[in-house]
Amino acid sequence: MPDPVVNDAVGPIGEALLRRARGTTHELSALLHDVEKHATINGTRVTFHCHCLKFDGNHRTRIDDLVSAISDHVLDFAVPRSAIAQAQDAYLRTGTTAPLMRLQNEATGLFTDLKQSGEGGELLLYVLAESVLRLPQLLCKMGLKTNARMHVHGADGLHAGVDPISGHLLLYWGESKLHADPTDAIRECLKSIAPMLTSSGESGQGHRDMQLLGRHADLADESLTQAIKTFLDPRHENFNKLEFCGLCLVGYDSQAYPGPTELGDTDALLAAIAEQLPSLKQSLLRRLQAEELVNFGFHVICVPFPSVEDFRSRLLIQMGIA
Image 1: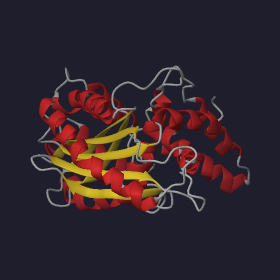
Image 2: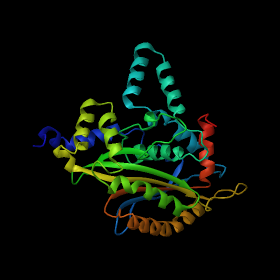
Image 3: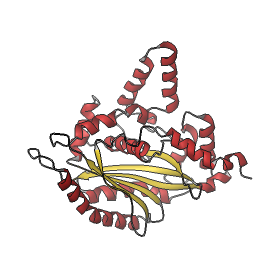
Image 4: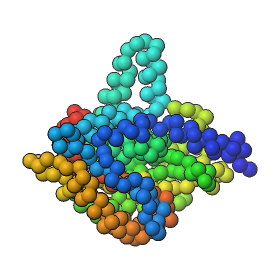
């Protein structure tokens, strides 16, 4: 029989998850334009978003400010909430920030210095998921790495929300890809995430992440964490109310941005990027069909950059890794 306490708490679970989302919905609004937001793609269950960089008062792209803003979230992204809560408690008791600084250094040390690392995309996806979409992270996979020069296995991130209509717990498998060509980024992103969503049972590729969630899910709220875990247990009735969804960040180079010696024009930039979106959506639709993902709920976030390689390099410098 289902646990009536947990089932009756589906509404409160959704509210509790929203309270756990970190940051504010306007956190990046000074840095990113909403070219398109909460759009749909016919024949799919995709919610599509596109954000591009803003210009400062001197008409320069605010890439450094974006890098700085997302690097401020390294601690939240890489360290479990309970560990942060303990450090905060120590600060309140002793007045020293040393425990928090130790965690900050630990978090930074988990990032690889490899120039082709996708961890910058993972960090940006985390910030957008938490602050814009209000989907809190359930598990800090970075802390499970045994080698800083290795990437995490499985999904890049695991976030959760509740469907307000069905009451299902939505488990979002996150994946980010940064490529110069948007078609390549879309293809690789959906290719990576497909096995997590389409396979089931103990032989599925997502099984290891489900095990990790069952053991290490951390929302710094024991009752909420335990309630969430009932939905992750295949032998619990609540598992039938768990829905797998995709959460994708697609970063790519765009020539819509001005060159190094040119002044930025916001209207021209937005028009040029918007003109590219129909082709981008067609590529996305074709890949969803090829990977048999059209029946899965998705948030797909596209972020065109002047250069994804430059974004990676600036983030490593900002964090003191390169």
